[in-house]
Length: 256
Image 1 (cartoon, rainbow, N blue to C red):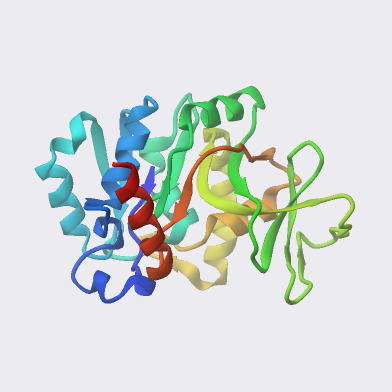
Image 2: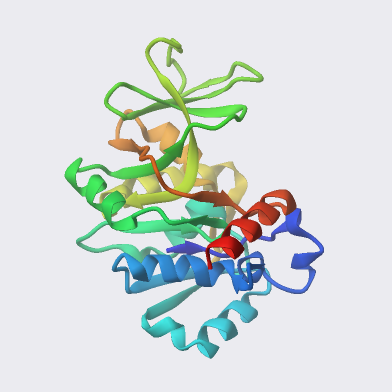
């Protein structure tokens, strides 16, 4: 699944007339770059969610013959559901007998996605998150076995889940890299979590439940096996804001 429904507010004015996923990086829309990297590593059945200028993504895919693979649309034009809600809405296309890859459209990387997928399968995980060492205020906390144990906001000192004792010598502090592999075994817990979110007022009849996937991972990390994957030697760009888009434009322009 590719998350392509974002509003792209940080990339305005580029996103005033197009979805963020169709903003070009070195002459090629970032959505196309993500799809081509997925195909390179053997993924041939992709679901793309849409919201902001969603019809332009649908037309773009049709104009390119879906890049020769099977691409389905998860339509969120009525309500943007965020990452967790987006996965749940697309469940009918993702549920089955094998794990699925989830990739933000504004993350460009040459990461070996097949090696990532295989790592997830070898560890029999419910979910595996690409992680990186980078400076931020909010970190995922993982143990020595690379298993997710919690989350910390370094600016406020808040630690989740409730009752977790934060010890710097016990946990590694890492940042999420916008790509994950998820097993269908996660869906019952995802439905359960969505119900609690809906009870808090985020339920929209016939539209879905809006919630982020990271708080779900943190809330369920004691119950589910959620792993960190932190390889080395690959390129990674978050192109969701102008300064990082400029960096990616230069990097991809030089190598092509």
